[in-house]
Length: 314
Image (cartoon, rainbow, N blue to C red; front, side):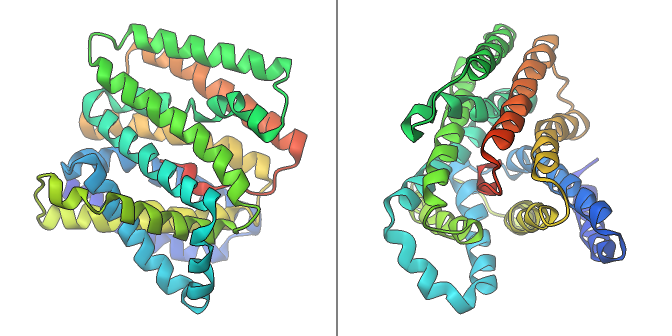
């Protein structure tokens, strides 16, 4: 499937989403969360198609997100912008920038399947930082850490001959994902989720703006379309679908289904890029994703989490 065919598919899917209101609530929520995971799973492929340097691709993505959310939040924009002075909000914006830049650099160096699965070490890595939140790591948490890092070792064994820098960047994306989860928890005490997404977009755009002048890149019609889709569909629309699904589905169901992101990313990479995951990737990925699902489920049951920052997604 080429880029033009995929673009037409996106237009068709967005048009079809307009008919969701005819479904009952639970079915509507299920369609929304599955749609968001499919959309997020396609992001690495679009990053590769754009051929833009990672910081530039992320800049345009957050720029489009910033512009659209400015329209959505226009009535409270000044009030929201005043919260930019909050230390945790600033830190989460910086971590978001690093998180995405590391990830999209990685997908150019190692297969998407490996980069995105390394990225999903984030929830387990967040456990390592839980003492900073005055939360003890229980035996279950220690087991998840052991299983996850076993998965990392297995995947690394199959990737060392590819690109060690790519592996390091992918792991850094997972580490910053974990740190972003922690800082987002602090930020959520002062800012609601949608406002935090907007503020993170502002901070990221400011941080990444200089890369427009110090890196070489080409902008053409296809790249413009990719940028618009990435900012509007893969960020704002997917964000809306994810949050709206929370109104109709149990948070545990939404959280577990969110782990379909890497599955769809692997499928997209296989179909659109011809990247076949290795046996090491499959085994290590199952360990990592399984550990992440268990971690997410146990955290929700323990703390009765109502919502969390969707910008932790790719």
